[in-house]
Length: 365
Image 1: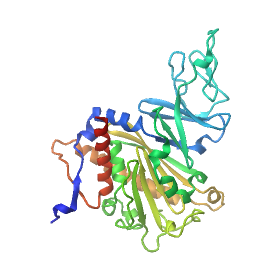
Image 2: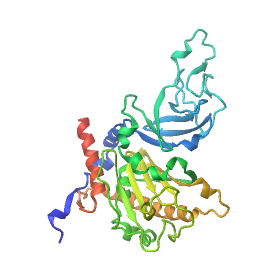
Image 3: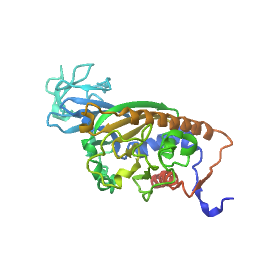
Image 4: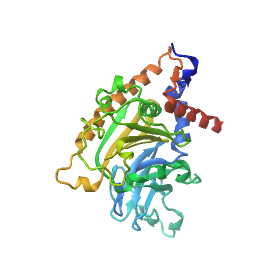
C-alpha cells in the first residue's frame, strides 16, 4: 500500500479541462501574454517568404522583409479591417495587398498604396505589428507589446542546449494532427513516461522509462532527459543509428534524449542525431492542433544514402498512441464521477505544470 508521503499532490479539478470560460482565460493568460513558438526561421528563408499562424482567434503573418529581418503582423487591413491573406504559406512579390480595395503594404508593414485616398498620411497606417524574437532558429511571437524579452522566459535554456546548434538543422518532414483534447493534456502526457510500458510497446524497447534526470521545474518550462537501453543509439523503429551524431554533442549528450515543454506551446525533443518539435495550437477547450516536425543536419540530408523515415515513422506511431490516450483523458474527465486523483513522486513534472497553471491564475486574480 502506498504511503501518504509517496503522494505529492492531486490532479486539477475537471473545470480546467472542460470549462469554456476557463479555456478562454487560459488562452489570454498563456497564448496572448507569453512568447509563443510560431515556427522556424528557415520557413521564411528569403524576402517575401511568409506563413500564417492562428493564435487566440487572431491570424498572424510571419514574414521576412527586404532587409532580411523576420517580422510579424496582424493579418488585418488598416482600411476596413479585412483579412488580407488566406493561403497558409507562400511568397509575397514585394508587397502585401488587401483583396478588397487594394490597399498595399511593404514587407516591412508600411502602407505604400491606398487607392482613392488622396492626402492620406500613409505613415499613420502601417500594419499592426506583433513582437518577434529568435532563439537558435526558432521564431517566437508575443501579442503583448510590453512583454519582457524572450530571454526572461527561456531562462537558462539557450546555454543548456547550445551544443545542438538548432539553427543549423533543417526540416525533413512535417505532420499535422487534430487531437480532441485540451492543450494541457498534451503537455501532461509529454512530461512523464510511467505510461510508456503500457501505451508504447515500441518505445519501451528502446528506452528505460525510469532513467534520466529531471530539471528543477521552472516558471517557463519543465523537462528532463531519458537514456537508452543497452545497444540502442537513437529513437527509431529499431534503435539503430543510421546517421552521424550531431556535430557538437558531448559523449554524455549522445547517450540520452532531452524532452522539454517550453510554455505554453513548444515541446522540444533533442536527440543525438535529430531534433523533433511539437507546437500546440488550441482550437477549443477540447481540441488542439499539433504540428510535429523532424529536423536533421543538412550535411546528413545531403548524403545519397540518407535515411530519416525510421525516426519519422517511429514518432508518428508514438504520437498517435499519445493523442489517442489524451482523447480518452478528455472523455473521462467529463464524467460526473471524476474527482482529482493523486500524483506519485515520479510524476513531479506534470504536477509542477499544473501547479504553474494555478499559480498564474492566482497572480491574475
